Length: 113
Picture 1 (cartoon, one colour):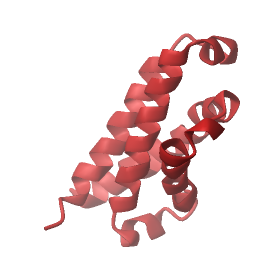
Picture 2 (tube, one colour):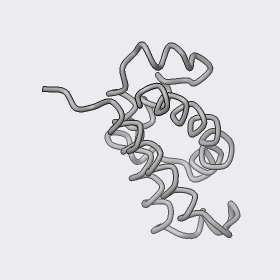
Picture 3 (cartoon, one colour):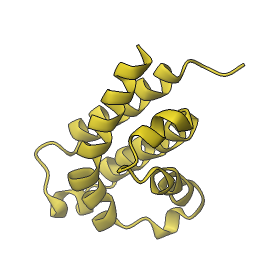
């Protein structure tokens, strides 16, 4: 039995909210030096990656500007190729990519209501 897709949208939004809270007031150098913050960000990226896989394709197609395949892929890297985790790339994801994802998932959430 599959879960309500709105649950996955909520999980993505919660993970993004957590990431923003974890990096608040930090710059790249702070992030690079703070192992705990990096690990919190990595875990939340894993969560949003997995939740994104479970969103129905019909809703993801409506948000075609979002690189859904890459979002799913970051979870694989963090879980299986964790030694390749790069603080600069994680920082760029947090600072540049999450806003668009957040807006798209908010729109998906509205469609699911």
